[in-house]
Each structure stands twice: as structure tokens, then as C-alpha cells.
Length: 448
Image (tube, rainbow, N blue to C red; front, side):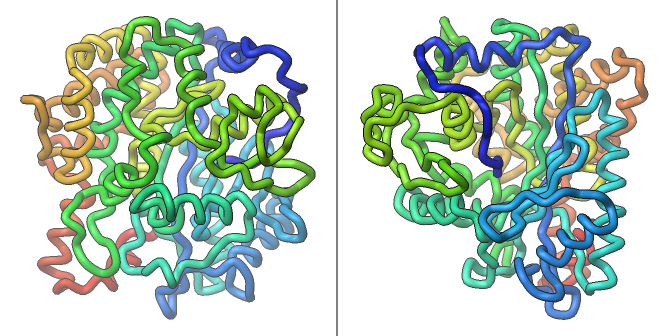
């Protein structure tokens, strides 16, 4: 989850909202890669989730990272809720999922080095405590009641709201993990093409990275239960954004959609003010019930943009949101997959040619099929395995064109395409076979 934004003066003109996105336009030489991944901490003697406080806890790990490796604390009130160092952040999801939001880097090779350093630092602290972390899309056994609750005001508000507007919101917040990458755009036209390709191919990422076939101790009928959860969360702020494929799509059209999404909060003086269900349009007019007479700043707008959760999300960059967390190789493969498609013009143009004929019904059908059947899914006469082979091929060519050797990082995806089976399929086979329908081994199998 995003941390509160800062800076930016009072919004004096409606045009500033789209201009905020336009300010993200960068020349190709300045494009960067920002990778993010989440992971569950667990206690090795009990296999219970890692708590926030105590001798063996998130707080203890944070303190050691600060003391030994130069991370600086981020506080909310008296609680340390994150760390920052050299453009990277470590933050917490609602159930204690430990998230690295990496610094903006120039290559996926640098992303892999950053990840290795992070995992080495965390392991050196956590393992002597009897704590390990696992990369998996959903908690395989833990119930909602077992999950710790992080001391963040944003999450308290969201938990209440999620329980009222959908069926799976709190499952998403407390018991899922993802891997994402943030990528730049050069212009409004480049933004539109990249967002469309990102949305249309997000089901491919869901399929290739599916790793959440278990929930509350049993198979759940899906290869990516995490993806299924997002379909039962809050239709006003999630989904495949059909409007993005319509004529006239641009920064302003995206802004119009975000404005229509109900608010969660306003952040003032270190606290979250409840604005659940209220309208940012009213805020612009000085008529927000939570802050009567007050108008928003650009940081309020930036905060509100973080409370929408489509399959690909725009801010001053585009965030790819469709993949389950996985092992180290898959965490690295996710940014490589999207960089190959997005940062080489020939690959991007070919990717758009690949998906531009898909209608909204087929795109949504592929999203559902990916969550249920991964690479074996299909919709509208399109087989995900075929679409994935074409997309990974284009990504490989795009990475080769960059000339850095990044294409080797696609190896786990290439392996899955050879067999048509992904991590979720392999774990289901072990569960029914060698594991004897006992999920105890998955903690070690998924450890990072």
C-alpha cells in the first residue's frame, strides 16, 4: 500500500489533475524501473504469521535493519510503519505483508541485485529469530482471525469500508501478496498505448505467475485465488477499465474515472480523516463533509489516486498489478516481462497488434479464466497459453534489443510455457501426491 503523499499546493484549477499525470512524461533516456514485491513472514516453530510487536516481530526486524544496514524509520504516531533508504522503501500491508518498493533503476539486472541485497539483509536478521518469509499469492492456511493488524490509520478505515462494499476486500488486504512493476511513459499517446497493452495482457501475467491455489487449508478451485479476490472487492475501483479502449482516451478520461471513485480518507497532520464514500468532486468545490469549506491539495489528489485498484493503475507512471507473488526467480521475471514489452517500441507496437482486436468481453473473460485455470484457460476463442507464448516472445525480443542480457530473467516463464504448467499447478500436484494433502511442506517450499 502507498504511503501518504506530501508536497503540492492547493488545487486551483480542474486542469491541474490531468496536468499531474502529464508531468510524469519523460524522455526515453530517463525511463526507470520500479519493482515491488510483498511476502508473508512466519514463525518457524508454529507456522503462525509474524506479529507486529514482540521479540520475534516486524518491529524487531525493522529495528535491526535500521541499526545494521542504515535504513531510516517512517513513523505513524509512535509506531514505525516503514523504512526508507536511497530511494527504496520497506512498508507494511494490512496483515503484516512485508513489502519492498525498490528505487527507480535503469535495468532489470539492477532490480535483481537490489532484490538480492534486500533478501540477504532480511534473512540475516530474521533467520536467527526463527522467522522466515515466503513468496506466495495467498496465505495457504491462515484464517482472517489469525492475521495480525498493522497500526496504520489508512488500514483501519479501509477494513471497515471493504466489509460493506464487497465480498472479498478484507481477504485481499490481509491475506494476499503480489509482485508489481512501475514503468514510465513518454507522452499522452505513449501512456494510452502502454495502458491498453498492460490491461489487455494482465491476464497473461496472472496466468504465468499464478501461485495461490490454497486458502484456509485446502485447494480453492483457482490457480490464482488472489486474482479471484480482486473480482469480489469493489467494482467502483477495480477491473479492466473498458473505457481505456474507447476513442478519446487520455489523461483527462482517466482523471474523470478516478474522480467518480468514492474517497477513503484525507491525510492531515499525521492522521487519517474518515471520508469514506465521499466525493473528490465535492472536495474540489469545498463541499467535502469530512472537511467543510476546505479544498484539496495536489498531495490529496495523489493520495486519492492510490485508492483505485484496476489491473493496471496510472499515476505519474503505470503500475502492473495482475501477478501473484512468487519465488525469487519469478519476482525478477515480472519486471523483465513488462520491460521487454513496454520499453522497446517495436515490441510495444507488436504487443498492441496482438491484443487490439480483443473486445471488452474477451478481455474480462481471459481475466476470469487466468484466475481459474492459469495457462489452460481460454475465453472468446483465445487460449491463454497461445497468448502467453506470443507475449513472452515479444518481451524476449524487446529485452534482446535493449542489449543488456535481461532476457535470461524470463527463464521461469519460458519453462512454464514449455509445459503449460505454472507454480500453482506444481503445488497442487505435490499436495495430491507427495504431500499427502498436508500443507505443512508449502512453508519451506515457498520460502524466500
